[in-house]
Image (cartoon, rainbow, N blue to C red; front, top):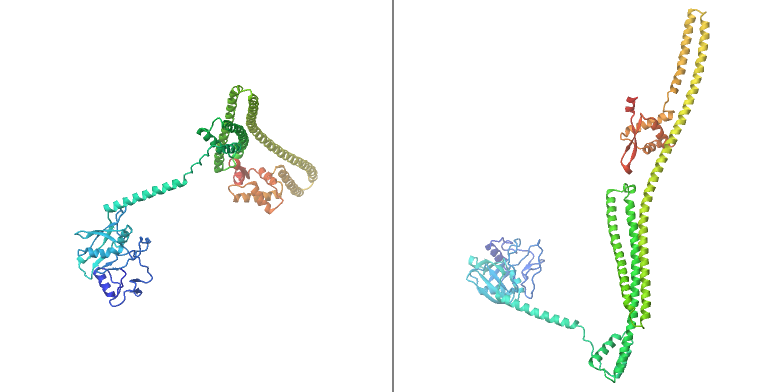
Length: 600
């Protein structure tokens, strides 16, 4: 391996014999950057795991980059790499502890010496079992050598420079299963298991707690030391353990009985300290319970307010203004809040039940406590009174909480009633305000109509007086004309016709004034024309605000009320329609002059 190739023409001949295209012309170097001292192209790293000193599996090659293998030169044979674009050769599943490989596709004239020459570069070969056919089994010293041997799978082998079929072949290297390999692997696994057990045993011994120190033997000095420790709270456990060991050993006798009695008395006095400590802890626990109850009741009040907000939002007055997605979210949130509130309420009621049960148990145990000795009678009475006082206080707290809950429920009901009443009152007030506005409008129209009637009456009286004057003048003229000639009569007839024409012209405005026209001025006529043109462009109608915004661009003095009154008077020209439902209700004005012309 790694021998320089000085004759490139021989390499091209060998490639032609194997059916592979030559890489260059005869007599010329095949590659311009080929280095014969290295046996490889400069710039391309060699991918060969069988180099001396290499004892690991080659790194994986990216799938999009073909593996570049080299030509391997041995003393009696040459190995040519396979086509890099072909898929890698298939292999079977690797047996545990595999050190044996199967090699097939050997030349018929291949010997064990040639096989050893090829595969000894992969590692130390222990045994070769060659068959009469063109395959053999090779056993290596280590498992990693098998990976190196698998690298040669797919190579074409040629013995010497012969082109005979018996001297060529294609190597196929695969894993082989051998009993010796399996036995060695099992032995190695058992050895590793023994080492693991030994390591665990050492770890357990290292983390095992140390044994307690030995108890000292009894003496007067040690007795005085233990008696002092029994009076100290921090060293009491150590001292009481020593005292117990001495008593179990049998150190108590007549001489040491007084000392042991004093130590036992000190241990008994420690009971009072323990009782006081327990009472202090119980007091802290009761305070913590009270704090927890107060906090839980505050949380419940807040939950009640949140649920009330959800319920008020779900009512018709506010519910119509939300979208479907918002309504869905509000309903889901309301259900979740009610569930959490019920859970907290059940928890609070459970705490109260437990307190009531504890109070009942204490009341039952009180008579038994009264039967104690005379020395502890006063203490038990005081404790019983304290417990009764605490129980009464707890009952009062429970009753107060229940009263608060009832008040909250009643407040909710009253709030709901108040809200409904307020809504009804608001609706009634709105209706009354609408009626009052309508009455005011009717009164204004009535006054306007009365003024118009008075004007018409005055005009009528004036016209009647004019007619009487005209009749008198006509009668006088008729008397004078009787004496005149026929020509004069014709002239008188023309004059009377003129008078009649004048009277007719005077009667026409009277008739016009008598007819009650809804348009009173030229300005209103202009407004009607502009509004008709605007609504004709908007066939689906427009709101009064939209119409007034358009008119205010022309004249800023125009107000909405004036326009609306004018359009309501012209019912045959403009029509008001309602569109939408609920909160989206909208009033629109439409032009109906063509239909009104047919009707009139």
